[in-house]
Image (cartoon, rainbow, N blue to C red; front, side, top):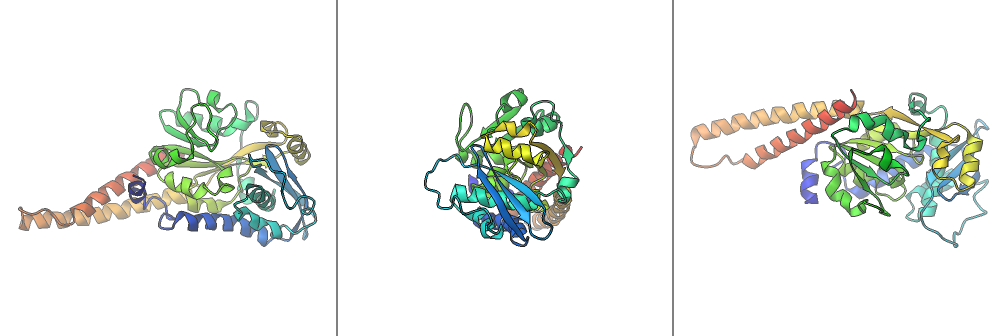
Length: 344
């Protein structure tokens, strides 16, 4: 079943011809490289109960910034590096994003986000801030709610209070630690290809599932979201249509909340959500792909007509190829319409 799904969606994303392992390494390398080429040192790293942050200083400008990442949901007393991080180069720890150790990966992403998510980041500067009056930690769902009516929605990761906000909508939660009516991780293989919208938590970068999930969501409108999100346009190459990251409104308050074990309290004076639509390139590529497949389908149908004019007793030998083109065109049309509607 999964193989059939992958074959169906092969032309919807331009990265589907690569293996999940190749693309996973690629997306993490893109994030890491932003930090590796920037001269900066770590001033402080805090591993909080829910969130972690790295506070770094830029050697070239003497300015500082903090980067967030979700803390691992695993407890350990045997970390090998506490007391050795402050004063070290960011580049020495950015590569830890690729680590399979959850705590190391969190430190790595925190460092990378501290480099990437600066005030001069173009995507941050052009992002649309979301209202903070009601349920600020759920502002992304509130922002899109009107577009989600009569749609099939998947949310990767459970967000506190989301059931109230999404009440009345057809949504499925896929969660590594499922509760209530959540589905476990493996359900993604079967659920995501059928979705109209998929909201992907940026913690999938930490647990290395981002690439597979984005590939399975290749026909859906996709939103990458959460405080762990790096504000990078390169996510458009992985099929992300909207980046919903956070802007740090008050660095000192953010640090206090993290240090004092805050979860969704992070959105109460520390950070707030903002959204940037990066789907223009994919919308254009889908349009070009539709035209290309339609042209090939016309040529093949003409070839079929000519075949049956000469032989009415045997089936057109390229019938399976024509069926595959019909299916591919249908998927492309669906993906285009979903994204077009999302942009209206």
